[in-house]
Length: 78
Image (tube, rainbow, N blue to C red):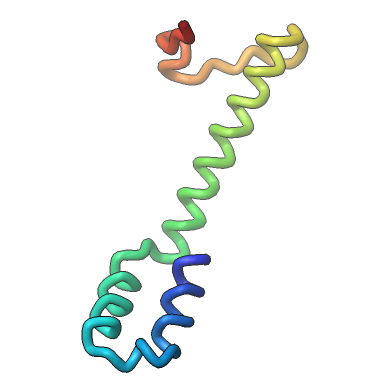
């Protein structure tokens, strides 16, 4: 969202008349993921964040379910 706002503002600014800036705005917009891909990425991130929070509460306080996150048992904090 912030990237889209920045590109829109930059494109409408006086610098937006420059061909180099127009090319930057166009190529950057083309490189951004679609709304559906952003939503999918957010959903996956939210799910893993929630599972991590539940696991942290279980590990710290011994309450809640023991959620197994793949690879989490290999993480070692010195």
